Amino acid sequence: MIELLKTLCLIDGPSGCEDAVRDFVRGYVKEYADEIKEDSIGNLFVLKKGKKRRQAPLMVCAHMDEVGIIVKEITSDGYLKFDFVGGVDRRVAIGKRVLIGKKRIPGVIGLKAVHLTTKEERKKAPKLSELCIDIGCEKKSSAEKLVSPGDFGVFDSPFKALGENRIKARAIDDRAGCAVMLKLIGEELSYDTWFVFTVQEEVGCRGAVSAAYTVNPEFALVLESTTAADIPSSEGALRVCSLGNGAVIGCMDGGTIYDKKLFALLRKIAEEKGMKWQMKSRVAGGTDAKSIHVSRNGVRTTSLSVPTRYIHSPSCVADVRDIETVLVLAREFINCEEEVLNA
Image (tube, rainbow, N blue to C red; front, side, top):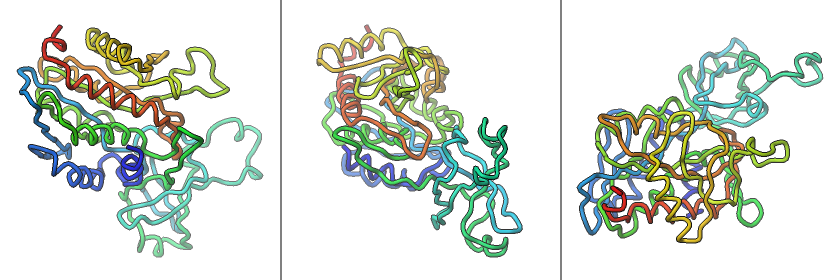
């Protein structure tokens, strides 16, 4: 699982540029899948047949894209002006390395040194207009040979083990969900299941709109990563969820009120398996479920998420045990008898 997640996290795939991730997924599943197809927006659909066929189709999904950057302009002295793709806190970007375009041109997000800032400037995050990317060029013509306006980029961040059970990487959101789905596709399942690797979640859950319309499922399970703020500066509900406390079962977030019966079912499965589970202590964030649960005449939707610190940053941190818990609970949910899901 961890080697698979490492491979996925190191593939560049900002929203709208998920091609390399999709190519890897397609190559991985081809020996296990019964059907593979792609739609015009870039979602990848994988049908894994089980021992039985469901009367009410089930879709499991995770998004392939990650947050990143897009080049907007090249200045006369060779710097790049840019914008973020997806929700990135400007405070975590300063001084970070990035890789731009298909050539993976290295650069550094720059800001004037602290010695040159005023007391007032030091009290707040810099405006995006104050940031630039330095790719080492002295003039515009030199930079234009390497990059172009419209090029996308990602943070340049290695995959590292932290302590005994933690990992650090970019794009754990949501390559963790993709890794879980790949593991499940390689297993023998009780029922036919559509696994969908969606695009453009970080910019508004766009791929999920067409994915849900295409599959037209009665049930959907969204596999995600979610915000954990279990750090010294947060207390109580502000911690949201915690690493090492198991999978986060979706109840309500900023985009979805999840199916109450499916929530209870996942909770029951976890307790019967003796596995840790938790809920988010704040109604915040959102997932592809936002688009899926209102598709067509409505889809009964639930979610399992990996608690992730410093999400949408170059250095996300997650616990291997939580990822493994998501895998087990997702497997049990997929293999539930139809009567159980319909209860």
